Length: 312
Length: 254
Image (cartoon, rainbow over all chains, first blue to last red; front, side):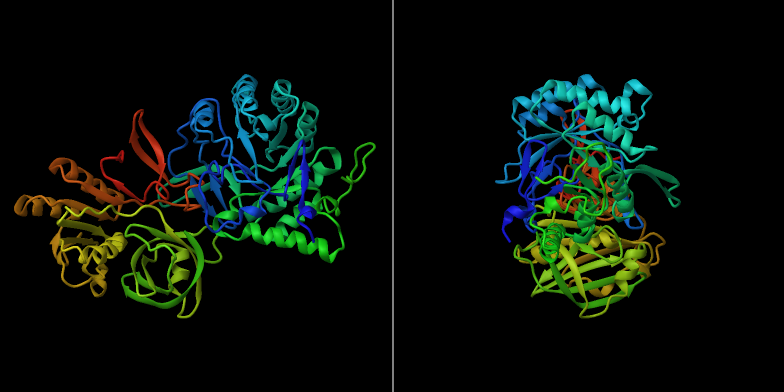
């Protein structure tokens, strides 16, 4: 079975494999982890960049929970200018695409960041829409279909060619509404889901830890989001949330994801990428399917008008 | 760094919730004192970081205290069981040929990286004084302390050695015996902060091994950061990657 069987198209870019490192768990890809088999990766997403530098949140920033963890790193990053000066927009590993994750407090900020990144010829931009919109009483952008639309459109208006991924928060009544809004705004790809809002209580030190929950605990929530959204949109989906085994990744594909995002599951399992890679190949072989893109949505059904299974 | 499985050779109870874990095997890259390993303990989602307490003759030792459910499970592990380990991680203690008169200051499990350091310094003809602080006499792991070193013990309740904090004892010792060439330290935050003050007051370089909750352990998640001085006052740096050993001068103590 050739390597091409795992190739997937996301918007205007092709990935060697559908395995993507999610934003925020891999710094800017500048740290070489000796035990990782980079050849099996399709893309690496950078830690989210904001317009201005951010120091990030005070400790505690992480809290382990049953089958997962809460994080409240607070988008610590050097800001877009330093990011570009230090050339952090290109991970520079042959065959691996870089997805630059950006977040802005206003459409103006994301526009200006996009302009700078387009000039540098980045492969793809992922809009992290889980940051609060300062113009809207601090609700998250992707908690409002209207805001989601305007932020995505703002990036799209700057450049029609760059691959644009919209990463959505699951903290909304109906995620298909923001998904459709992002698609209408010009997103090429959706990434479902970001972390789930959560809180932990530290009785000993009498404090609380507010943040986003990730890990196995949120996998069914992510799967449900992909399940619901796949039926309604035409654009491909990256399934992210709680992938800690090869089987988890496969479940996302069968639910409708074209690619998968690996998050905090990578911290404890250095061989997660290998496991996913193998489980994809094995599934294709056992089911006599030619390529992974044909497995997308096998256990789901398209419901939008004129819908048909992708045959690319 | 490497990710590999180590077989447990011994997992011995020392005293008062303190254990010594001996693993069989080695890394391609020889660890430096101050570096740590990240161990997977099922069924927990995150690994747990432990300073390397000894590394020689195909054996790796970890000193740990039962501090929660994960270390409780670790304490129940038996000989020949396998443990999934990533390491060696982080930066170790800097060593300088000119530093002959060395003070080590350790509290609790914070003595672990210092024990490893004594191994390295032993070949260097250094004069080592080891200040070892613990809560009570029962908390002192006497049987793992190497010979040939001048120990100064202290306990919070005075049940063994001097009564008081390691920092205070160290200060008194300096007043009487003079300033060392360097101080290396590991232990609770407040203790390290005390060492930082001594370093500043007596103008003696001091290096401390910081601890923090970690998620990735390899510098990619920014979960374990601590405030480090820089041009614009301070910035958050990663304990796992930029440390865990820092010069006390760099740290913005709180």
